[in-house]
Image (cartoon, rainbow, N blue to C red):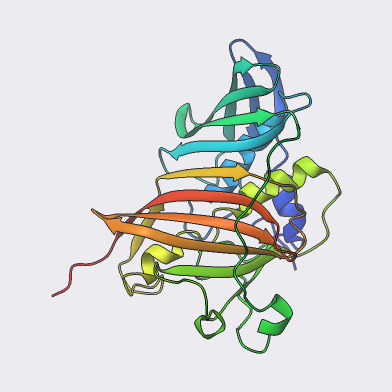
Length: 290
């Protein structure tokens, strides 16, 4: 039986928190209010806040599409409290528009970012190739399906289905840097609204991207005393894709040092189309040995 903390339909839960209520108040900013889904840690899931900022900014844009986001996690959020989003229309040009979005709880900022939008236009085009990995159907017998419940401390009613590509199935990736590849998608069919899929991609972009910083050092989420927190987050939307169809999230870590790890990622469709790129630095602390 469903309850308030773990609704029966995780997709309705996700789309519910990604739907913000405008307050009608506007002085120097457009103001929206949202809520959070429950988390075992009591903290707000970072990908949720990023996606809500995109959703808030899109409500102030007419005919342009998000192409990049750069933001900082300032404080951990409390999932029991509402989140207020202030959108500052800092630039509106013929081709590009920028929005600064601040997320607050009890008047204190928990996330701050800038999102850039662009009108669709033709231009030069190229992309890197997707790694040669087995498809998700091929991996069912090789890898255990993972709903990310424990490893990423996400609520029981998880809207995202994920299958991690096992190391033996990756003969070409990673070549040198430590990396991870995961097939993921929203578990049920979403409406056709393209903006909803762009927002949901931001929601998914915080999954698995931190893992290479851990695996590069032989550390696991399950190790006792491991502490991590996202410090910043960046997304570049390249091409449109549905998030209820399989996407391959390939990530790697360039460096860990000073209690921080730098990670970057790319999302591809089944057909090998590069959909988006991401980057995130994470605070990473482990118990001292001995």
